[in-house]
Amino acid sequence: MNLNKIIINHKVYQADNLHTLLENESTEVSWPGLVYAFLQNWFDDSDVIITHTSGSTGQPKEIRLKKQAMLNSAAMTNSFFSLSAENTALLCLPASYIAGKMMLVRAIVGGFNLICVEPEANPFKNLSTKIDFAAITPYQLNHSLESLRTYPVKSIIVGGSPVNAALEKACENIPAALYETYGMTETASHIALRRFNGQKSDYFHILNGVSIRHDERNCLVIKAPHLTTEELITNDIVEIQDEQNFRWLGRADSVINSGGVKIFPEQLERKLQTLIDIPFFVSAVPDDKLGQKVVLVAECNAAELRKTELLLQKSLSNISKYEIPKAFFHLEKFVYSSSNKVLRKETLNKAIKAYKH
Image (tube, rainbow, N blue to C red):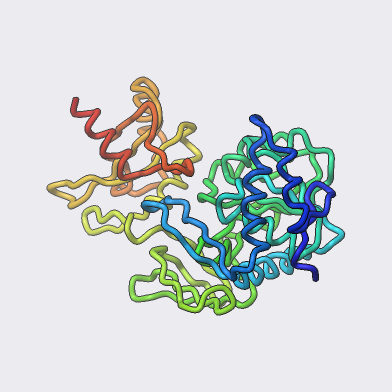
């Protein structure tokens, strides 16, 4: 295994010719610069890579990852998907975040060719090479459905945000094996995978070398000594089926207590996603009688919101009375983080403020 080289678009790059990557950079194509910046750091004498969290639950924070932990994570994924030098993978995510960085490390460890393209909504539309492995976001998956029905891709991991129920249903006839990832920057990408088409499951399956338990809050605790020296205590409430499988229920800091009944917004959203075809999320506001009441916030105009209200009034037979949204708010545009994730608290506050005016 030669950890000092990488094959990108069929060309071998090492420290001494890395600068030639930039010959491909232009105002229309940004990926060479991001890949070059990461590989420069990878090939230097430091034993760490500095990266940042996505900021989905707060401000992005700096994380110092050991290169050895990243190598271990890459080997774990390559083993699961049986990736080796004969394979071809696709990088269509920014190399500025951990998901993109780890695709590069997997290519280094596996010695396989990595096709690099610009991160865009449908990264498969202009490809002409069979792809054995790719990592994409739910947004990209949603925009690539037509391509993936015919384009030869063997396995795809999908991460960055949860795969919603409507998207999962739309993927039923995709030939590629699709896996939702569970992980974080601190674990150098995913530590568990959930197949959501074909031989699908509701449970995430942990990868080799990882063990799990839950704490007194029923939140997931991860032990992965080959990735991090300390146990990672998450805010994710889970149902542990056995020592290798768990089901994600939602975040502890988002649970709604309405009339003494605990409601997981993420689970309620999955129930509603097959009915509502506009961007939305479920949250809560204080209520004198219930303590908290469920509210729905949609990214739409007033007319679309009213249409959604009327639709739900006719189609709520599969949810309890406590789960029924008691108020509806809308914004023409949600508040997003720098990594394009919805900032729920800020969006809710802005929507309530707009409603009062």
